[in-house]
Image 1 (cartoon, rainbow, N blue to C red):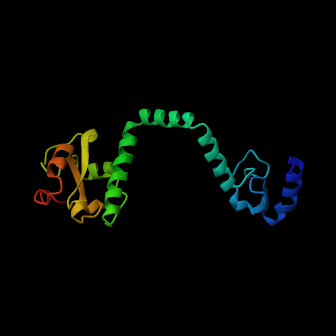
Image 2 (cartoon, one colour):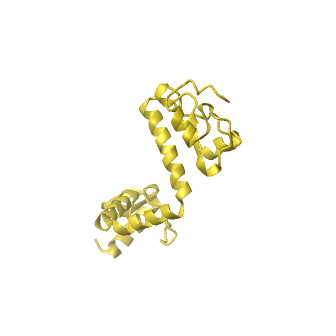
Image 3 (cartoon, helix red, strand yellow):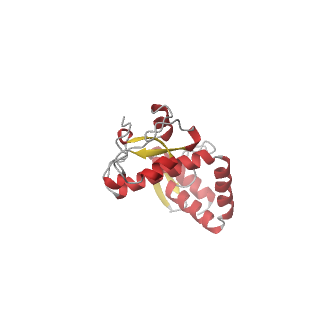
Length: 171
């Protein structure tokens, strides 16, 4: 189908709130086309599904630039990378144990606990703290603000799955 034919077809479909997708060669509602100010009608030339498939194929054909860009971002944002990894690991452990999972921001926990380790009660540096589960996930604890506290990484590792030290400074 030529570009002129697609333009003619889109003019016919526009009053019905539809547009022709040359990728899948079907008429679709405008809601299935991403917004794009560069086009006269304000929507991209192909539907979201075709666009996603096109992006996947482009990435598969030449993944190196994408990998380089991701690695560069990770080097420039180490704190964000560490935060994402912490959140994902805690949520994953809780899901595996079928526990309640709440989206927890470690910085909020740090501020709430005023930077004091919940295990040894000594101050903790902002860039060197762990989020400790008071009742460990392995023993059925949930991943929620009520069940987490700030701790030194060494205190948290030493405590492990034990509950004996879990009752120190709860709340």
